[in-house]
Amino acid sequence: MTDLINKILEKGVWPFIIFLFVLTVAIFLWGLIEFVVSADNEEKKTIGKRHLIWGIAGMFIMFSVWGIISIIQNFISSL
Image 1 (tube, rainbow, N blue to C red):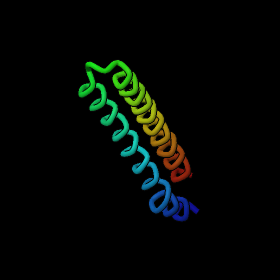
Image 2 (image 1 turned 30 degrees about the horizontal axis):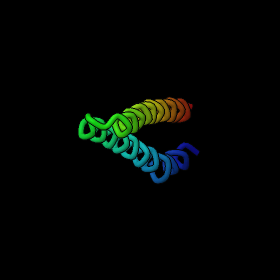
Image 3 (image 1 turned 90 degrees about the horizontal axis):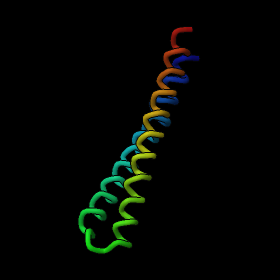
Image 4 (image 1 turned 90 degrees about the vertical axis):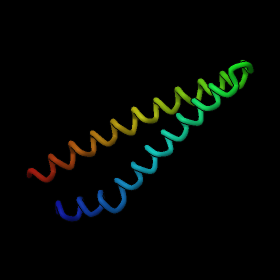
C-alpha cells in the first residue's frame, strides 16, 4: 500500500504542488515588478502590492501543504 501511495505522490501530487509553488513565486515577482516600475502611479502600485500579498500568501500555503504531505507520507511509511 505504501508503494501505491508513494507512486501517487511522486507522479501526481508533487508535480502539481511544485507547479503551484512556481505560479505563486511568479505572481510575487510580477507584483514586485509592478510595484517598482509604477512608483509614480498609485493605482498600479496598489495592484502591485496586492499581487505581492497574494504571492506571499500562496507561498505560505504551498509550504504548509508541502509540510503536511511530508508528515503524512512519513507517518504512512513508518507503519
